[in-house]
Length: 180
Length: 455
Image (cartoon, rainbow over all chains, first blue to last red; front, side):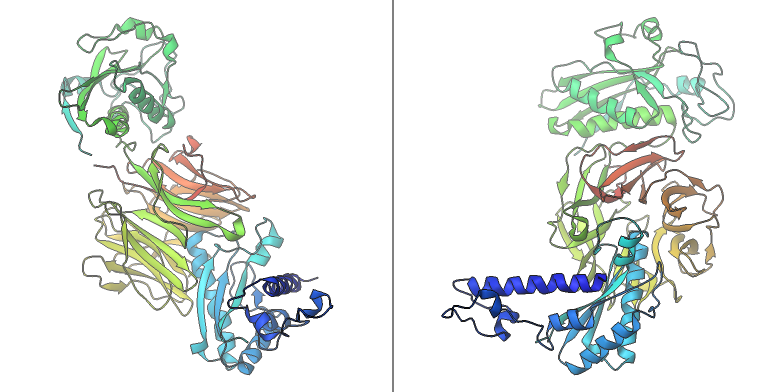
């Protein structure tokens, strides 16, 4: 199982759990987006509760983007070149963003810990910008894209060793708003 | 925080005649224990007694009996002793071995009694309460072998200031015996880290250099990094970077008022701020469309000037102590290396030519060295080199050593060391690399910055 897939499934589970919890809450003030757009709770039926959880991501939702498109691409050490394996992911991101034109994103550049803090902030900015340039070249308006570098401050993987470092060298396309 | 000092019994002529007794250089090894110094008054040696640049092979035995008087005497002695011991240059002797007791400031010590326990130096003092409730501390520093008084001073201060006073006494002794500036009456600001590595909470924290009086400056609601003191100790300012999902901010934090303000605004990220030696300017990096360049801002007019315009990473600027040059980090040659330029951005030249990747250059306040982080052979190192790149010396080595900051005397560095599990601690090392120690602070910390000597 690829790391991307695993993360996506983890997120999907969290989303599902959130939906169940919301359904159980006695006075949900503002139900999360998922519960809002999913089938209404049916407390009067005998069906098991898990059947009420949406079975797949709603098209145009953040989950749709994360699970079906992929919100993260990876980089080589001290490099901000878009790798061949990242290009189809970013092309799909661009297409998805074209389809859902109200979505705005923030691209977060991340680095492994095998570099010093300030250099990594600069390197992460290059990575975020490289992704932005790719999306823009595929027709996404610059006004919909913000960038930031987290340098080595927000690793996905707290471990040490090449596997962890490889996961931590990434660009994350985070949906800021506009998703369904 | 005023401490009044009076010199008493300070005999410059004695000192001139005396110095230097012990040049503890590699070519002048420590004399055998108990024997008198082999080469008193060696010509051409620096004015101090201890030649620290070459590295002390064996710390100097020093006797520091507890200062007399009911008020704080023992506490002050402990702080002075700990400071001197941590420097690695001095070996405070066990008070249980002391033969002469109840020293009297009005009398000379019994030198044979101190020679007998191999003390080379002797410090003793007395603490009394002045009529106005203030603390008065008299102390003397003696060279045991030449049987001469090297220093005598009186300090008067408020009782709650006793730790600061102790550090000043330790600085006096260190300065007298090494000929270098002291660094004990200082603070360290750093980033206190908590929580798992994937979701670290980072708060600015400040403490005395010996770990006392720790206190948080920010609440952890946003990421903080790279705090640096203004070299001008009179304005008590820190500059640092904050990082939020919405962007980065460079804050100027006033330690007198605990207030902060944003000092530079650019569309892209701003990071890596550092003060000029006069405290009136900051140099920093600005990111635009993914490219980072170095700018300088006048803190009074708030006008900014761009110093580099290269399609490479240019970051981590640090001023020379004369303010005329800036050393910085760039990957314009293909990998991160160190470069020096004039403060107007002209005359850029590369200075690092060893193997590996060089980052975080920091110019010594003395001007004689540039400290850096070096990545080579899978490890990270703290090192120093001359401003022209010569005489490179690697001082430390571990999974991750990073971010050196100079003590105000330019002879000791504080940095942080992160282990593979993610534990991150502050460490100190002297410029010879021989005195490498965890900083006297148990908590988790990174990005340390040493203050100038306090007023």
